[in-house]
Length: 213
Ligand SMILES: CCCCC/C=C\C/C=C\C/C=C\C/C=C\CCCC(=O)SCCNC(=O)CCNC(=O)[C@H](O)C(C)(C)COP(=O)(O)OP(=O)(O)OC[C@H]1O[C@@H](n2cnc3c(N)ncnc32)[C@H](O)[C@@H]1OP(=O)(O)O
Image (cartoon, rainbow, N blue to C red; front, side, top):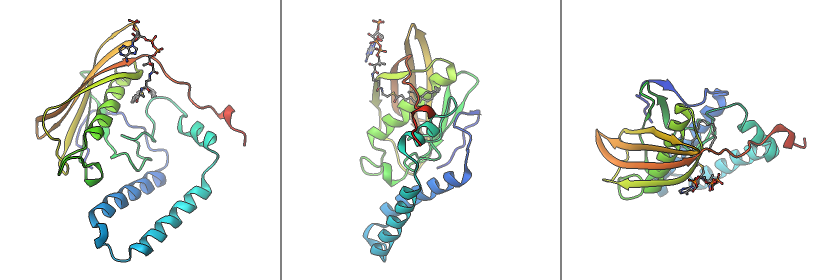
């Protein structure tokens, strides 16, 4: 999970290092489980311990509407998204940086949980990385919105276990339509390119007023 790109960090500033650390541990468990498989001794005990952890977290969770209001507080980047979210165990997480030329760029190394073809990244995972990166590129450029169309071209298989560079760049804005493009490269070779149409529209954020408790 290296992050060697330079520029302005666009991921949300960590609000709670303890939550980030717990998510990182959960991520590590997910990789380790897939790497160990049936070879792990005492799987029944491991399962019971993981279930216990889940029960403690579930018992501590506030009502969902309250939690949603917390998650959407503030502006710009958030810590919960499935790509860069440091608090989200399913996010790799990709760390994006804004560049002076208006583009965004990040580096990430993916392991077995993201596998599609043998030794390579699942195409839907590449789409996830690019959709988000294009969205963040729009935010960095100043006009963002919802994805209306995302066109991908898979040029060559995208490798697991080695650094991938993910880039995005807003091309133009015309009325509410936003055109954005991006790519995933490995070792300087183009693996996936993306073109997106975004529409300048934002769904309302859940508010504290929605809470009952
Ligand atoms: C998502 C934002 C998150 C929070 C952002 C916060 C801060 C921003 C800062 C930084 C950004 C950071 C992170 C963002 C990261 C990732 C982004 C992820 C984005 C997503 O993961 S998002 C989920 C997937 N996404 C959907 O779930 C969309 C479902 N869909 C709809 O919600 C509507 O469908 C919508 C809104 C697309 C349009 O609806 P609408 O009613 O607003 O617009 P309308 O129909 O009036 O169309 C206006 C003009 O666009 C043309 N047009 C519309 N759709 C088109 C299409 N598909 N193809 C070609 N042209 C199309 C029309 O033809 C017309 O063109 P014309 O004006 O020329 O006639």
